[in-house]
Image 1 (cartoon, rainbow, N blue to C red):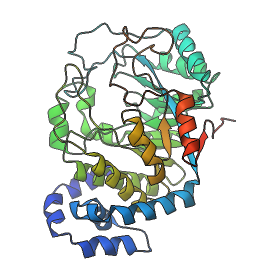
Image 2: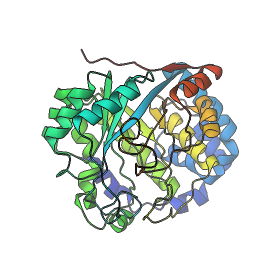
Image 3: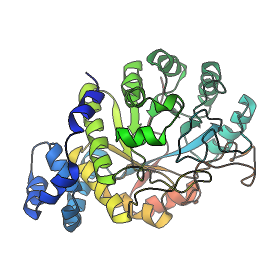
Image 4: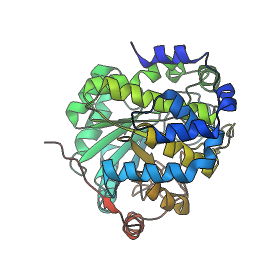
Amino acid sequence: MSFFNTILELESFDVSSYFQTVTAADVERSLRREEQLDQRDLLNLLSPVAQNSLEEMAQRARRLTLQHFGRIIGLYAPIYISDYCANSCTYCGFHASVKFKRTKLTLAEIEQEAAAIAATGIRHILVLTGEAPGKTPMSYLTDTVLLLKQYFSSIALEIFPLDEADYLTLCQAGADSLTVYQETYDRETYKEVHPSGKKADYAYRLATPERGAKAGFRAINIGPLFGLAEPRREAWLAALHARWLEQEFPDVELSLSLPRMRKAEGAIPPRYLVEDRDFVQFMLAWRLFMPRLGITVSTRESAAFRDRLIQLGATRFSSGSKTGVGEYAVRSHDEAAVQFKVTDDRSVDEVAAMIRRSGYQPVFKDWEIV
């Protein structure tokens, strides 16, 4: 049984109607529960009514985060190695129909980028490509991982979904973590915004974390792209997906991300706006639902907003991020097409200093392949 079966079972559940029945007493009851919260508790905490209880949610979430993670914030940086893409995702500035000069780094250029990133102190890297297997075949990806092992202790992948055997090959080469976003859990919306390309296969993408876990990745990060479908339902299903993975693969370190859709050149604007208050509520509800869950916040968010999230349950930050191919050392910012605009443009040193001022410890390395 896969999580796809769970999705089919839940599709008839009317989340909006349920929210209309939630009372302050329901929220309080879910907050006071000592045992593991269930999916109705999660809905209560994600409801509009629960926004009146954010302070109490924040206090409990902070206690749980300190209990399970201590005062640490892990740091990582993304490295974009190719922006070729065969998909037609209507919300992405990299989709196949957008006309711009596409780039794929050579191994020598990847090494230039890696050296520049490593010089900042970063030891956890996230490798990103567009979804074009013909341009970035397995041989290229394997060689990239083998090269990056010389510079980084942890190599995460955010690439096009692969079969289990291919993930096993990359794990054996040295990759240890996998990030894959379902984008939206709403199947009708998914079909609409992915009109063509391999990514149009909803079920195959949904099962990607399962294939990665079976292949041996020690850590998996998932999440929706907030802005495509109704946000509270998306937050609910993403957390249920994480809980399902936790139960099926108890040895895998799981985390959720909260990327908010940004307007990109050649792409549709967000359909739903997720305000800062909603973002915080979703993060707090996730923490209360899954106390050992990692929560990743990228540089899509502003510096001031990210500073406040340290006290509220975040465990992992990107820093010093460049979102264009070769933007660290190979190409200038003006030459590189970017997937999304970085809002927090502080250096790694500046982010680390902010974390220390907040009473937390920035962690550059907490994993080593032996």
